[in-house]
Length: 207
Image (tube, rainbow, N blue to C red; front, side):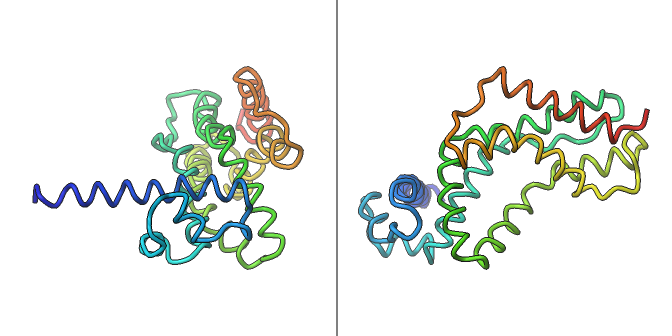
């Protein structure tokens, strides 16, 4: 068992090297301009090694987005707690989202993905479906709060979650993605999150 550990670590290091090289290549050359040969050369591994980890360029790109997503959601999901104020809980949930939106690599790669998706709608739908599966924390929290009678019942939790995420993204994602705006400062992040949560609770909370 002990002798098998070093090869595993070497494999992990090679995979990490491939991912980091691919991030740089996609950012510089876009989706179409990046080849598996180019990624292999940048990672200093063989092309076969790249394909052993990622069977296609699509899967490599999706794996990168998922890794960045996981980085922004490394904290455990915030479970609804009837003993805590709604505002404090929602802010905690959205702070995890803000970690991802403030990641320069995620913004750059999202720009690459958006350009590619315009030419391949089927890829856009598949990728959006996979990423939406990872955004279940907020709808789950909303459903729990509705069940407890703290938020209005009869409203689809995913719909409400999309509204709240939309308010945040309109300041912390889309301007950076489409217009090259600088990431929000810590003070700006607090203001955007606080205002979005207050507007959301003003409409949905049961007073």
